[in-house]
Image (cartoon, one colour):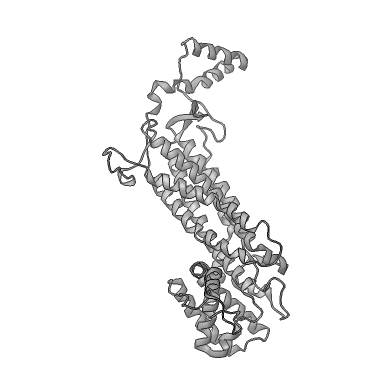
Length: 446
């Protein structure tokens, strides 16, 4: 079944090529397609395009389909083109002509736009939750190891004293900024395109505000042409947010692999969190962090891939946009898995609290010596030259006492401020609004 069929058969090779992976990808959207249809038909009844008894019959069947979709059991049959066709077919088989009425005032264009936004909105909630949990783990470890010093590096050269409190906390704050970007993408996603039809509206007196309220959207994509132009744009903006989180995870993973190596020995992973070698019995490899790095680097390519698909398209719908689903829909689960794995690893990582006993790190404290001389009244440039000469002459004596007190330094991590920022951003998402709307819409069909 194809919603656009007019009795003319299509070449099988053409059909395989044009459908591509759409049937597989549409399974990601199944429950969202059903939910969107619920809101649409409630609106259709309100403007006289459905009778009350027809609405009741349709809502009852759609609720059953929603339950199937939630369990992953709403499948697309052979010969059916997509999830939209599958839902309409099942309703028509059960309810006859009543099932054929649900598409009034709607195109597959705004239908898939809606499905993508509902899917993305829910997946962003999952990513935000997992990111928030990882931030909590990082802050907990930052507080736990705030007294343990470690080398800081510039140009991969020993530079100045750092601490595990700073290291863990840095990634917590980085992810907090990433959440801010995710919030911006959520606000762009959380606008209702339904009613834009094929991108030019409808002659039916549709009530688009009603469907927005029923689905818990913040507002509408008002201009119907822009609603269609948003296909690809929304995915690209959200992909940038995902790639920002992925970039932070990738950097953390690289640090962890480096610090876990024997040449550094700053951290150690529990044996059960590592893998071995088929030939070298001593190996304990940080494969989780290595795979995280690779997966997150792949996710960072997602905005560029979407850009290359969409950047030379004019306004209006084009089939090119179908390919974006293959890239975009699976990315959420992959990033969510990385966030979960990194949180698990961070919680179990073991820290070396004796790193700075090695003499090679003595030069970490050269700046501390310069600053001590400045505090005694010596001009900074003179103090710098004196300490530099002492180092060259082999007379430098390190003082490992560190007195950093300003905001965000070793002695004043500001972790509670970071936690507060994170909590304020999470609250701004207002996920409860869409969750409550979804629950009311499903319960309405009882």
